Length: 390
Ligand code: NAD
Ligand code: ZN
Image (cartoon, rainbow, N blue to C red):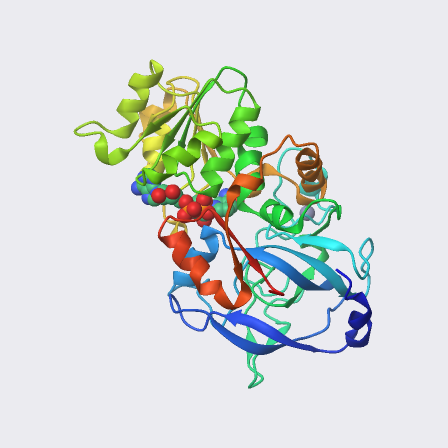
């Protein structure tokens, strides 16, 4: 945290540093020296302190076709950093600030950013293709041969330095430990806790089913528990997740492989006398979404889709199941507006109301980043903190 003096020397100049490059779909990331250009107007160059791996990184790492499959690329979108330098027209950020880059934009100026109805930034959120928010395919990264490297989700945190647009940046209190704060930039408390609080608005005494007990699903349970849900059922193929799930408020578990002839939705209906009030899909498979949908109570059940499948595959729902009064919606970033809501979550953590600690199952050095992929894929980790300086 004391390296701000060396920052001044680099201001306005390219920085050479290490990054973990994804050169080909599904192949191990390679540590290379890259060039990170200075920030342009409305951009900030950040020194990443630590980052973590979310399943969305794994999905894009494996993606080998379509417009979103682009290489070479710097993945990573959960992180905390220090502001190294700022471009023109950047207000509210200065060198040395502790910041959280966030994949979901929040321009604060468009109709939707000004409305409390959603967290969809009408100005920017429809573009998920560009490298840089205001400059299209222009990249701030080059490899040693001078070839452009693609950004990822406007963050690219698997690099010692990155450049982020101010619409994707939140200044946070330096009081929160950085590794805990990193979890707030995506899956953990934001997508999960936000979905239970803001999107579903789970109320006291209600019943909840969560499909997929990764960090996102566990965070949904944490949010539902804080809201006073009476029964929180976890559905996962990996029984190792059940013991862990108890720490996050799960009261019951269903292993689909042990349901015999019955569908998971039938088992859940039996457990709850007709279906849960709320269900959450946290895996990213259309078939699971259908099961989550019919696990809810006829007439009033609500399903929230959080999982991100490959190629935005279509989903199929029974029309009568919908006609009979169930509702379904999806949510990116838990319905939260980053600039407004992340500081509130930081506050909840500092007051010991929000459990972030149990999500961190592993910590690694930047050099060991490929191990984080193995641990997540094998179902052994929830969040693995990767320290850039160690
Ligand atoms: P994860 O890999 O840690 O967890 C996924 C869990 O699903 C694992 O426990 C796995 O055992 C379980 N699972 C896999 N197949 C299953 C099946 N058929 N039935 C039941 N359980 C099954 O992943 P994560 O980081 O928690 O992310 C979960 C999903 O949420 C991913 O699709 C990710 O892309 C998405 N995501 C969405 C947002 C958002 O804002 N909507 C944010 C972050 C992540
Ligand atoms: Zn906006």
